[in-house]
Image 1 (tube, rainbow, N blue to C red):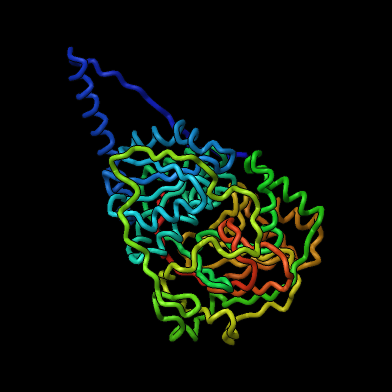
Image 2: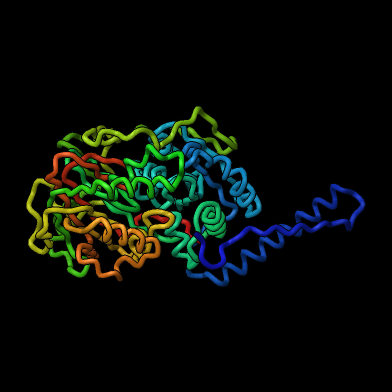
Length: 459
């Protein structure tokens, strides 16, 4: 449901007939069009001098997962985005992903000097691939600075909804959200965005831009895959199914409050490159880019990047362990098998319905899980729901989350804390942990926020 007035694309056509020669008329019309665009850009520059902007002309790689959501991403691109980019004077190359981790492999090896921005049109899983691919590069410090963009083409579209929310526009969904995000992308303003580094028990680290979930939220996210054909309604369907058979998980949760200064920050993991199992680093071969700016479209046999059958959660992470663990060092986290510092808070309860760590405002198009979150505050919003909550109270909490009012309901079982880092140790032998909606290895996990590590197009 939309509230207020949503952004809409309005087209005005002007006919120029000042000259006899049709070709001369076309050239004159193009001059007027360029003049309007340039004047608009100059006005925008005066209004937003303090903001970083995409370079113009802009060379953009647009990665599309054709089977995300209801499988309509390419149709939405053809109906909306292609024309918007053309009118904004943004040159782009369309890359159609063909398998899981295709985007991750592509950006890990691409010649990024050919591009001014990488834009994803899919659900949140494809951006997860791109971010981790960039941070697996030997030149990760430079690579992660390339502006990233998100266009909603999946079921959840949480980051797209968050970007739209940060712009101050009223809540919208579906194609209205796509048009809004397309408009913001064409404006080209760039902002820093926090990333969270997540450690799994068997290594390697992964980097997250959205959330980590265990319990109810993760179960709904993954078990709803069977209802993917109904689009975002799959989450509602599976929420009702899980409410009917509510699960309780045992585990240990601890965190470093955001208000505390980390006393132990110095001396922990000062190296910028970490390796698994004490193995020597293995460099990623520097092969030429598989993307050429001369080619307008890559079309391959298409499979979903993040929408295939539910995977066994005991499986190892998709990333190969022979890749050197590049990326920033984690100063707040001791190794997973070591005790936590004394300034961490250990949650006394061990029975949970859910644990949810958020670093954007939205968990879905219509779910404002962390209404106080911003792009680069350097904070993780940690939520957990204690066992004992009734089904009615839990349903009421999720309904309130649509408007971001759940924290005002004073639910005694819901706890919210702002943290810099946290550790979760599940005791229940089987379960699901998701990072940005993607299943990761089930077991002990810990995370630390890195403020403003990436850059995102926000308009």
